[in-house]
Length: 287
Image (cartoon, rainbow, N blue to C red):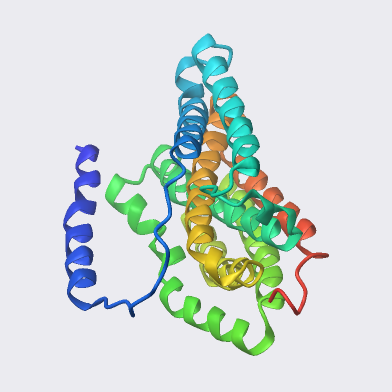
């Protein structure tokens, strides 16, 4: 059954873990042993867990369900409490003052919306291919491969472009082009022909790396060196939250009977909103 897909991760992770343990050698670092902010960890974990549960299960329980309303309220309250506590803790789990830098905040927003677009393509396009065009699960998965094939090569080229021109041009161009490609995918769905999807998917796959890869550089350049490990964790959390929002967005629109096209248009609008927010804050210094 489809549940076996989750077991695919296990051997991949074990191989990766073996390679890292065998080859990774960190240089010796003299650092003071610090205490883990356990209270902040618990507040953040509870807040995020409740928020993600509410978003993911809203369509199942119903958005007016007390379970979902309570979960979302508890999650938001927990995250507010987390922010309040961390801002006053001498050794916080996350330095909340980093979010006062608009370029850093903009880069996190970009990570979130690119993940929304990725999950919309990865989750709802195969559903469309199966439910509307009659593809089998295997061929539905094969049908979106063209969107991810460019990633390995284009990721390297996007990094090179950032080295040569700074991160600002490729990120802003990538957000715009990916938004157009995402909207184009939504626009051709009404034609109910896979052939028309191919160019839009290819453009999406060619432009998404430019929105994502140099954006990491922006985030890292806006924080001190001793905070970059912490920021890496924040980026991963934001990306996972973006994926959750993408799945929630699509599920809500489908449950309302609005259709697949609206899902891709909404994702494209979020990408353009991130572009507009980033435009004044990405400069040569941060990129």
